[in-house]
Length: 414
Image 1: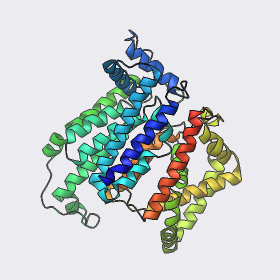
Image 2: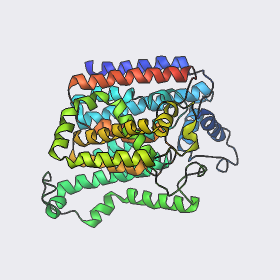
Image 3: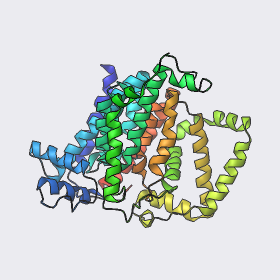
Image 4: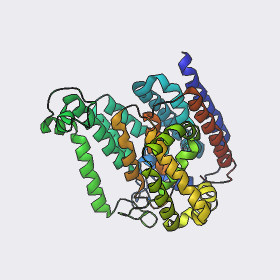
């Protein structure tokens, strides 16, 4: 029972903080979400012509509100909070399977992850998106591939960006199968020495196992063709079929800040890597100079000072050349630190290119767009010393409570 005490602490903390904020007026993006939830609650005859987002979150909350007879703002927030607490419980279950020794510390880190924390108590879709992604990954790990694809597809109905993570989970499943069947070892023995079984995997077997994943890709392509793009109703601020570096750079910068104890503990490994290949220093110098001279914060919404990320990071660090140099130096260190960070399994390093694929198409820079990559990073990374892991937890709690205070008093947006 002792291992559940931190989980009880998390639940009581969430419920207490929710009691403080539940009756606040709608804030930041909440009015838009509330309006769309009400469209479903009122069964508006022109629902889909008035939506500005794919309504997976709004439909779910409205359905639960109809079932429970709870439709006031604070009651809808309570439904969202319940979903978010379920996401924490699922995270704990997944960590128990992947890295049971560190399940408590990782769950605490996820529960108080600063980018996510202030939205846990409000009308935001992030908790449902993460819950569905976690369920999908859980079923993938237990080899229930059809259920995994189903919940992955549902997560796409909350956030289109999650099509990338549906493909990631599919690829992880496929690699696990190939490992067991020894296909990779036969094809590339020098690269896949960690593969052990001794038979082949047939195409028919792949199609049988992954039929719903494949169907999901065709459904998504159909949506893109019919919708004439990926963004639904917001193509003016989320242009289709473009690539941007802003979210990638911002996620790497935030990674440095939030995982500072880990960054410090990685110093020796970073130095060792650079000393082993000194050309890395040349590449870093070229990157810093080029990025500092060419990168610009171009999205108009990323200049609003009421957004804390704009005020403290994006505007100052992308408008001033000396601060730009600092910004990209930190990003460079963050990249190298990620390079020396160990994961619990080799194929989980695919997280990095998929994180890039999920972030690069988005022009508007926002911390919330990197939530799935960060959640998976927490799941996959090997824990280091207890001192470092608890230092990360304390840092997360401190920042999260600061952000919660800002939202409680409606001082700033994240």
